[in-house]
Image (cartoon, rainbow, N blue to C red; front, side, top):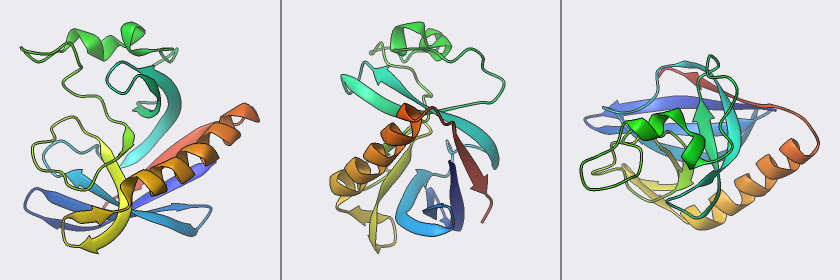
Length: 149
């Protein structure tokens, strides 16, 4: 499965985009401009996340091999903030409605309400997650292709 993230606009710290699978628009995205991933191809794996206490779609560099099975095995765990055991930079696809104060490289999904605001993030994420989970259960790989605005 190839997920395409087409960044549509950059305004200050807000980077907006459109996420599509096989050319079909699925949802809108928000990223923090100062911590977003560079354009290119990335692998997506469902990995048990300590922060969310569930499997989350983690975006990994193609050079990272093998992929970690959970946060404890994640090599990025060595780069921690001072007051938390969570990785400082851990890009993942997750629900959220705004990017302010997010420095973790995450891609927030939802439906665009206005500039810098997503609505219904949980419903959109749950639908996307179910699709990703089924793809992995079928033994297929997931690739995220990020295209510059």
